[in-house]
Amino acid sequence: MSVEEQVRKGIAFASRRYRARKYIAYFQSFTNTYAPVETLRTLYDSALAHSGMVGLSVGTRPDCAGDEVLDLLASYQEKVLVWVEYGLQSAHDVTLTSINRGHDSACFARAVQRTAQRGLNVCAHIILGLPGESREMMRETARFLADLPVQGVKIHALYIIEGTAMARRFQEGVFRCLSREAYVDRVVDVLERLPEKVVIQRLTGDPPPGLKLLAPAWTLEKGRNLRRIQERFEERDTWQGREVPGASQGE
Image (cartoon, rainbow, N blue to C red; front, side, top):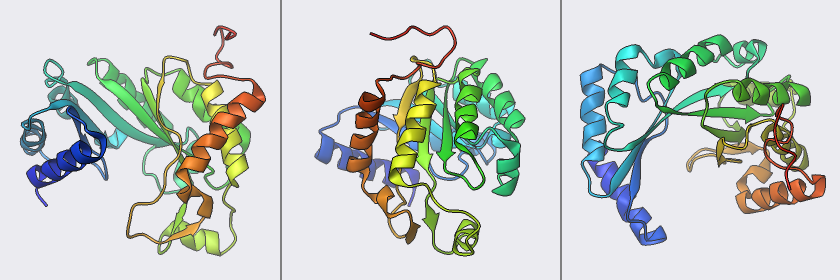
């Protein structure tokens, strides 16, 4: 399906379901900067040519965002809101090596700095519940992000898809997935350590259609998961940014 077809389909869906009139072109899955700059320009221009487009969000890897690509993305800022999304997943290099991420945390930090220098908004993706990570390690990932010029964060629960390398490790008993309640607590832990100004764009996620989920089943219950996160904030009498050094003490 071409970019034009995908955009038309997305606009039709959002207009019908949400009565939307303004849209962000979201290049979401995979590495959306892995092509010659002129190819990328053609793709981005095609998406933004549709009526009602007010933003461009591009998901990629921190090791696939060279200066020419960032300059291209920065060139759109006069016309639309631009976000660049980088997958960090964890601030711990031992974890990144274990999951074959292909870059380290320093690479991520450099990409964020280079992106922010151009005035672009940065959104970081992290995964809670990766094999071998303790609760404190997940808190450290939040602190790592808090020290960088990151404007948005998307939080994901680790879920296991049939046929993946992670699935083989899971089925061999190498690790266990977080329970819903453990995940909820870790989300709150993370948010306590992120500045209040950081926009939380996602609190949980579920697998795309067509993929078989092995575990944990609770990731499919998005509404219930979001309610439990809200309830846990109330139960712990806490708020986003509470554990950030020098932050206000709330109301």
